[in-house]
Length: 403
Image 1 (cartoon, one colour):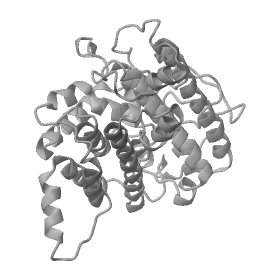
Image 2 (cartoon, one colour):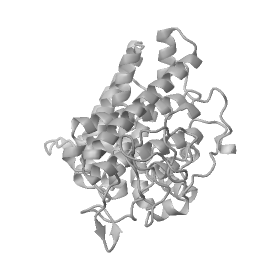
Image 3 (cartoon, one colour):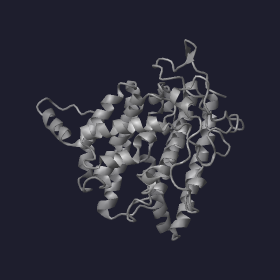
Image 4 (cartoon, one colour):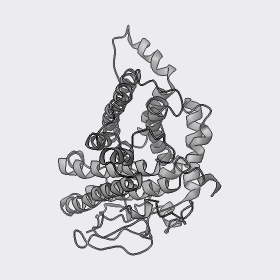
């Protein structure tokens, strides 16, 4: 059962929100198989439960970007080897691939990062990773480069917290200072209001740190494209993510290796949910807060978030130090199996989460509002774009730039 859109001048838009191009027909996640090799142009399963509406190729009146490229271009990385987990991941294909749009967002992001001061001397890595491509792939309902750039700025500021302070990819990681840094950063995410005599001292600290400046500026910019409640949603998710980063800091300082159950709990809190929570804002509509906060919706949405970051665990293994925490390595250690077997089990965990999201999203969509159905479909589309980007980004594939 497809969502029924309100119309303005004959064009479907979300009530109370500006039009950003009519939405492509996104379906509530189907319950049939949607493996990596499936073509976005091929007809999918139909119906809810047993007949979910097919993931659209491109509907009449869809956004200009979606209309320009109905079938994603061939993947840019080399053919997958037998050990590549990609073909085994239960995940939808990306709904659109517009390289020019992605490149425009990436260039805007590089300019902004240079202005703010994050990733000093490493701006070429941002360009090579092609973060704008991720946002373009994950948000097929908008072809507005400014809206996409707003989401990209939020995502990169979140990545900067990890790369600057946690993983040490940009500067030396000081896990003994991580809790202090995160607490100060949270004063920007959820603005602290100090007595007048003391507020300038906090402001001086914030202005001196590029990561905190990035968080503040990205959230401020997001207000131009999202409602106050949508921005508040993101602020809440960032607070949860900071808790998880603090947990990871403890692991490093205490020499603690988390058991698999603890790491999976950590991935519930440290996932792509802060990026995914903007799917409606970028597309120009808003899911009612009561439905977003429904525990059943929260369960399905966060399981999708965990699945999305497990994709990251799988694709980032080649770039990370063997001592870094990742689900495959922890499974191998705990179960005493080979890394290849651990990768297989990680894929199984990912697929279990995805199948559960499919089933529960279909059930929720059958009785929810049009905005909820669209939000679940937007989330499904985000998952496909996320996997597509991970499969080819130079952030995880050293040879991707040459492809």
